[in-house]
Image 1 (tube, rainbow, N blue to C red):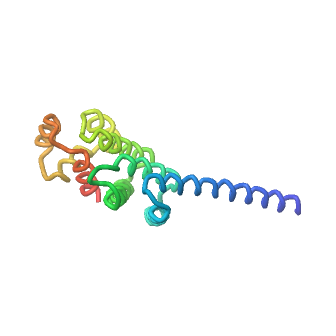
Image 2 (tube, rainbow, N blue to C red):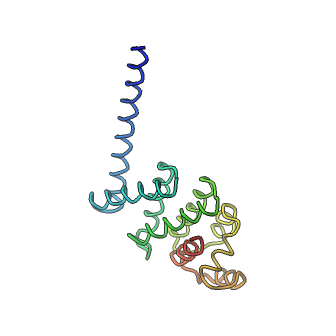
Length: 173
C-alpha cells in the first residue's frame, strides 16, 4: 500500500539521518585523536576495510579502536603501529573464535596496560586471562620466554606495556 511505502521511506530517511550523525561524530572523534581531517578520513577508511575483511561489528570495532588508539598515544604504538597491532589482535581474536564481548574485554585490558605504561597483575591475570584463556601462554610465546620467566618478568616490572601488547598481537596472528 501507499501508506506502507511512505512509512518505509520515513524509516529509511530517519535511519539515514542517524547514520550521518554517527559518522560525523566518528569523524570528529578521530580528528581529535589523529590531529587532522585527512588522518581521520584515513582511519575511518581503515576501519571500514578491517570490519569488512574480518566480518566484525562496525560500531563495536570503532569504539574499541578509538579507545585503543587513545591509550596508545604517546607510546611506541602511536600512529600506524596501533593500526597494525589492533588489526592483528582483531584478526587473531576472530581466528581464535572469541566472541565480540571477549574481544572487547581483551582490548580493555590492553588499553589499561597502555594507559598505565606497564603490565599489572590485575589486567594480566584477571581481565586478560578471563577473556582469553590462553593469554599467558600467548604473551610468553610472543616475548620468546617461558611462562615461568614471564611471571618473574611481570613481578619485577620488566615488561613495558607497549612491548606486551605487540607480543600478544604477534602471537595471536
